[in-house]
Amino acid sequence: MIRKGVIPITKRRFVVKELAVQKGFTTILSLQKATGISYPTLSLIWNGFSRSPEYETLRKIAEALNVNITDLYIDEVEPTHVSAPI
Image 1: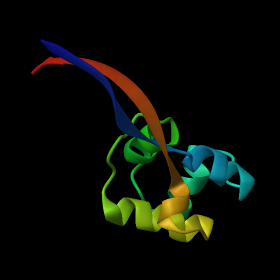
Image 2: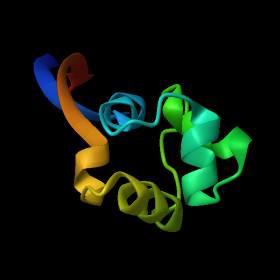
Image 3: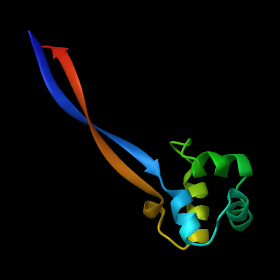
Image 4: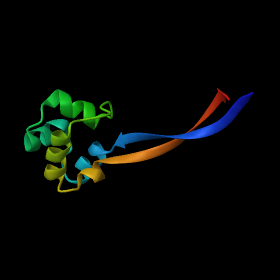
């Protein structure tokens, strides 16, 4: 017998670029200068390729943008269909 169902999967999407532009940081380099974070690391976050940046990195970004760390990302829930034997 096979049981079918839906499991919610949470994906974290960083919105650093959007927040930075709103706060006047129009380039990665401008935010890099304000945070001291390496350009390659900041570029990955800015472009949405980093899934789990270090806490200290997020803290520096949040401080430069004058926002809470939790404002730097959005958790999106996506339903995933699964089938499993019982």
